Length: 335
Image (cartoon, rainbow, N blue to C red; front, side, top):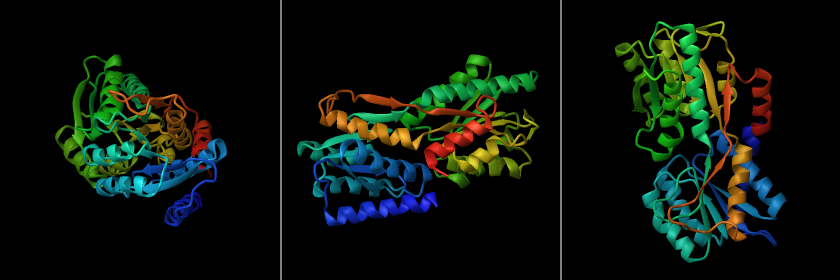
């Protein structure tokens, strides 16, 4: 029911754009998401519409990037054409987006970014505070593995986007630092490129663990990749805990949701942690950042771009009770 409700909100936004309507006394804000089929982006889009209207009397129009960098870039052209006062972007190809961003800035439109700064435009960037959670997940995994298997050296690997600056700084590097804070002798195989998605992650796991079966800490850096990671582990007879104790490896993920909830709190599954990215607080932070620029509290452009960090959560089998995780899911995604 939640997915349908939020999707209809997206349809409503599209109809508002087509009609060219605007809030009577408030700002008109373009709110970009990378993929509206993702439940996180559905929830933050719906919250952005509610929050902006309630707090600022502003109208939010949601733009769906459809998980396609070309579509995301093309959507920027609509910011100027659609008569918007401001936009918060979620862009995968910063170079391609730069001319459109600069055109909007030249028209006096407030522009901000989500997740990644956009080249040298200097527009303010909203980010989740991922690094602290990644470090903590690495630390907990290392401690749990050493307690269960003190005679088996730690060998870690990450699956994600090796060449993505923000993924490296928020996920890959701090995770490894967390592991090494517990065991400085741990071997790090580094980040493997799973950017092609779920099936790529599955094949990487099957191939890697066939060649290096001693791998025991895995950071799967997005929930869609984790579906493939866990399937790959299952295919080769791994992915196992015994009543909360690791047998084969420990897995961490990102984008905690109701599917991962079942696995994290299954005492016989090796997926035991996930980064909880809160759509409600993320949406509110993105809207507040726009309005802070509008109201002169934040510069519209700086060199380098200012980055503003919003809370992320460590969802852990060991440190967050199951009932608390369920309440967190309900507060962020409904249900």
